[in-house]
Image (cartoon, rainbow, N blue to C red; front, side):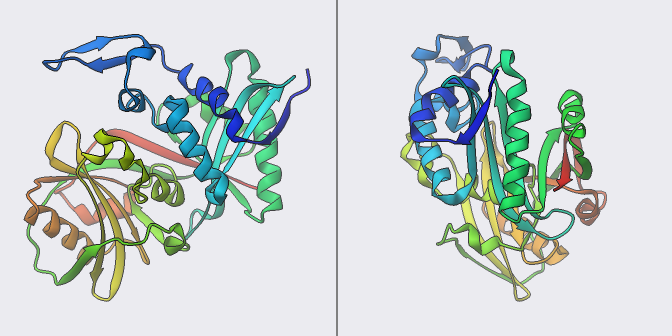
Length: 313
């Protein structure tokens, strides 16, 4: 059995989308009145499909996503046997302070159940690509209960380098001077070498590309979401923030934050002040243990956890 790996093409969109959709066992949507109903995939709107896992849940949105990746945003590659696509990987180049460094972050590694060897072929391809592109490290982020995948990556030499946990923090007015403006540029080049002290569940570059460009606003339901993309300047330091209203709690904002330095009490105070003045009561923040110390006794953690693993190539 000869497995080959190559860069993904737009012609591969349907097959890649099929790999992702095969992971979903039940397709559901909210009916009139708020009840959850199970329906055939074909009966779902683009947005209803999106809610099951993002852009790859439909060929239409998958094609838009892949076309962006192919412009240099990320590495997208497929594994195939006799012309049949049996695996897919998506990795984002990044440059962040320690402990991450210059790296390729593996956002997706997916294969058909019958061809798990495709994962090995894709991993070897990614390791070679990291070496060729002078990204000396591969990283991957897993949920706290992903024991099987943690063992899989450990087999290639990946080691744990970071953990993050989710906290809820009340908003409040703060005695801090700051300037705030709308973010006008969605270029990821702005955050090269920056920290992502809040919200880093995958990588700084991947989450920037998923959150800061607003091209998905062509989907009406996405356009209707309350999302704030802002630049904060506090004590001469800029921070880029994306705040997204929780789908089921209109007074809660999920926070992503990129900054030139590690999170400071002044920047945190400015975010909390802006949020409370904008009518919100709580913030949802995913942070590492060092950043969590800034919350003191005010932060309330929940079971959500991610673990970052790295392989130096």
